[in-house]
Amino acid sequence: MESRNAPRWGSLNSSYFVGAASSFLSTVLTFPIYKTIFRQQLHTLTIRAATCQLGKEGVRHLFRGLAPPLMAKTVQGTLLFGTQGSLQHFFSKGGTPGAKSRAFSGCLSGAIEAVLLVPFERIQNILQDGRNNVKFPNTRTIMQEFQTYNKREWLTCGMYRGFTVILVRNMIGSAIFLSCKEPLRDLLTYPGLPAWAPSLGAGAVNGAFTSLTLYPLSVIIANMQAEVGSNLPQVKKVALRVWEKCGGKVSLVYRGASLIILRSCITWGVTNSIHDTLSK
Image (cartoon, rainbow, N blue to C red; front, side, top):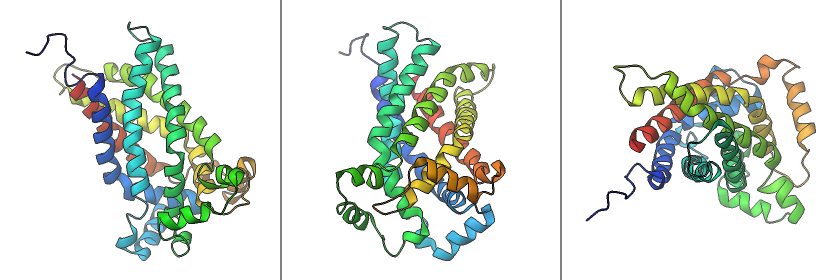
């Protein structure tokens, strides 16, 4: 007979599964949007120009590069709701978690996420750049290229290209999202609303705000990771080159941000809603 004290299906353990499943589905649905954003970040294109560029490459290339983010986002969802929950429980010593424990556990969760997922993001960004379609048609050819690098080059120009910027982005992003998650949900809770609605709204608003705040870092990461070679420029030079390519205009740095809002609203709204609903 099941004990009354046994954890329910929506407990911490199930949060690992719920986070993984919801992230998996959200990634598949929003990948074409993300790829359009990536082309805007890389070439400072308008939405129409980026869409036309993808259209010329054909449908068979539309989901090229999906496998790495699909695996990465599934792991990300597991870490976000599972690892963060465990860390938060540890830092709050079993009591009600405060803002500091939520933020700190979010930072650590983001750091773990960065260490594990940078190689996936690196391969994804190479595959998404149309300039690499011929030379690097698949993941195997990319790995063969990286095998020719020495140990230092493998880290700085190979699989962990852009690690420092990604570490900063993930730590800040996780801290913001997880600190605001519950307060936003409570703020949007009104009598008569379906139970999932406040979580959907909170996830959408929170995800969009976090993504927009850190968008310039994502632009730098996209430009760093799309390049392949054993002698690539460091963060400062890449950031300066991006700024010059945008003509010193913040508006061009944020080109693609409108789609980021749409993608983040869908991704984090759905993920947050599913997780909170099943946890109850």
